[in-house]
Structures are given as C-alpha cells and as structure tokens.
Amino acid sequence: MPYMRKGIRVFIVLLLTILLTIFLSSYVLAIQDKSVYPSTISVGGLPIGGLTRQEAVEYLHKAGPDRWANPMILKVPASQTTMERSLDEMGLTYDLDATLDQVERLIQNAEGPYPLNHATIRGKTHNVGVILRIESSQALYSQLNQIKKTIDRPAVNARVLYKQGSLEYRAHENGRIVDIEKTIHSLLHHPWSAQNNTVQIITRSISPAVCIEDIEDIQQLMAVAAVPIDLPPVQVQALQQAVDSIDGMILLSDDKIYFPRDLIKKDSDYFWSQPVLDLLMQIMEESCQMAQLQYQRINHSGFIVSNSLPHPILISLQIEQGQLFVRLFGCQTVAGREVVVIKEQQPIPYNEKIIRDSSLSAYERQLVQKGQNGMVIRTYRIVKQDGRELERSLLVEEVIQPRDAVIHIAPAVVLK
Image (tube, rainbow, N blue to C red; front, side, top):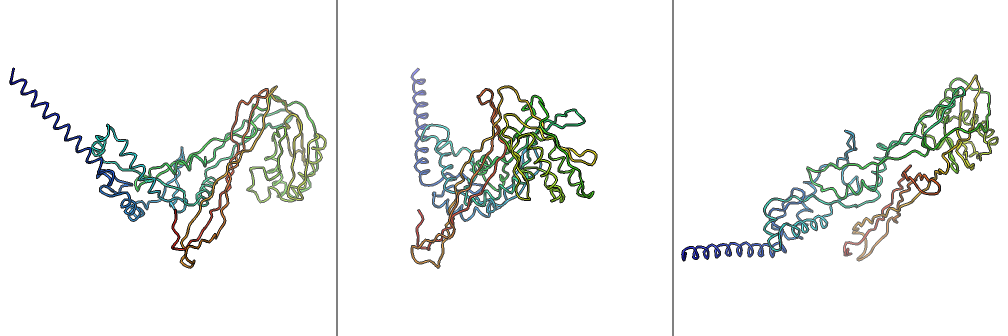
C-alpha cells in the first residue's frame, strides 16, 4: 500500500511537470509570436517563419512578384472557356498588410486556450493565400466590361406572330450577364498563390421585358395599314430582315421602343438602309395615328413608338403580295396584373494613383487627372398583382467605368 501511494505521487509529479513544461513552452512561444511568425507559416508559398511583420512585408514585397507572376485565369461557369489576364491588366495588386493581418488572425484563433494555442499552430504547416486589393478602379471595370461583351447573352422577349388569321405564341428566353459586384468580391477574397490562380467569374440570369404570361389574350385589331414595296431586290432582302425583327413585338403599357436602336439584330449592312427606314417610318406613322399611339420621328435616323394606352400592343409586320402590311392589336392582360420597369443607380468610387515625381519641389503635390466616379445602372422588371409586388427581376445592367485620380507628389512627401 505505501508503495502504491508513492507511485501515485511520482505519477502526479511527472504529469504536473509535463503540463508545466507544455504551458511554459507555449507561453514562451506566445511571447515569441508577438515579435516573429512561427516557422510553419507561409504566404503564397513563401515561408515567413522567424520574421517580424516589417521583415515579412519587405521579404514578400521583394520575392512575391516573381513567385506569384502567373497570370490570373478567369473561368466562365458551366463552360470550358477561360481567359487570362495579368494583375496589372485587372487593376489589382497584392495587399500585404491585409494578408499579414489574416496570418495573425490564424495564429490567434488556433485551437486551444491561450497560450496553448501557440503550440498547436506548429502542429502542421499553414500556407496563407495572398489577398488582393484594387489599385485602379478604371482598369478593373474596363476589363470587366470587355469580359461582359464576351460572356453576356441578352434575353429574348416573348412574341405573338399573326399568320393567316391565326396567332402563334413564342415563349420568352432568359439571358445571362456577368455579375460585376459578386465577381469583384470573388477576386478580392480569392486566396492568391502561384498554384491557386484560377478565379470564377460570377454570372446571373436576366429576364426579358416581355414574358409570355404577360399576355392573356389578343383582344382587338386597332389599326391596319399597307404600302407598296418599290425597292430593288437587295433592299427587299434588307426589308425582310427588318420585318423579321419587328414582327410579333409586344409593347407594354407606358413603354416605348426606339427603332432601330433598341433591336438586337444589327449585323446586316442593309438592315436599316435609308430606303428601308423611310418605308418603315411611313407605315408605322400611319398605323400609330390610327391606334392612338405616340409616334416620334428622330430626323432620318429612326423613330420612337410609345404606348400610353392602359394595355399592351402587339405589332404585326409582314410582306404580302408586294406590299408591306402592319397590324396593331390590343392585348388583354390578367386582371389586376401590372408590369413596370424601373432603374436603380449605384456609384462606383474612383481610386487615387500616387506617383512620385522628382521634378516637383519639396512637399509639392500636383493633380494631373481629376477622379470621377463610375456608375452601375440596373433596370428591373417588377410584376404587381392588385398593387402588391410579386416579382422583381433584372433586365439590364450597364456599367460606366470610373476614372482614377492621378496625383504626382515630390519624393519628400510622406504618405499616411
């Protein structure tokens, strides 16, 4: 029995010694970690163990660009398509201060109570990705606008075609656009490294302005007009392209269409030649007067048709037996249903680019280019039933890129 009590005392002493050693070691490591980073920490594949924060900044600033020189690969969702851009082209740069802040949060939030967590952080290696920041808003939004031109796909409005006295309904199709706001968030929160340089472009669905469910029935023939076609064959072909673009269009109440600017098809040399435009102006002006729609001629460049009536209008345009026919029908909507289109604007702040200029006198600053905010303009389709909003969907997102302010400063000026 005495031997057993002695053995227990020895075991307790050994256990306390081990625990005290671990605690003291962890405490020493905690004190050390306040001055230098643990040996198991890397940033973008570059080890920073044993370095102070200032030393780590200087080391990463010097060694990082070569190590992280791989171009950014932008991947289009649900596709094999990728695009390469350098960080300079994207207007992005490394944010080393924010990256080291993340390293320090990793150390502080390691598992276990203080100071034991400073021992557990050394249990495995940690490679922290480099955080990026915007250096030039102008360059970033310029690149995103170029990418949008490649990826964006417009939505297609519903149509109703009038053929030989019968109606053919064609359903709408949704489109897609690059989601600027979420793509920038993806870029700035991507843990950058030489091996981890692929970033997902974020897209979102967009709706057409006119959906098939907006029209319950075609109610009445409001106007019909015809003009003879006295054009050479090549112009008749161009006229047919214009007719195909307009035929079956639905003009909602309080909406307007600027012909030909608002039409999608713009790739034909003869699509809106002057003889074709003059013929369309003539027949549309006549039919709009019959249906009491507002018609406005824009010199010789086009015309605007506005619908101030309380119901949608169907535009039927056809070539029949050497004549151009237009028929305007009134459309019946679901009782109590209302579709409105609104616009919202969101400013894009500009960045300041500071350039040291040895030609300036001491402490002199010179504004070379004034900054200007950009703008994101979003157009939404809102569906209401008996005055209550049921649905809000994005139709169009237009991005006006900002212009950076460029400031030259003398070498002696201290930046804060």
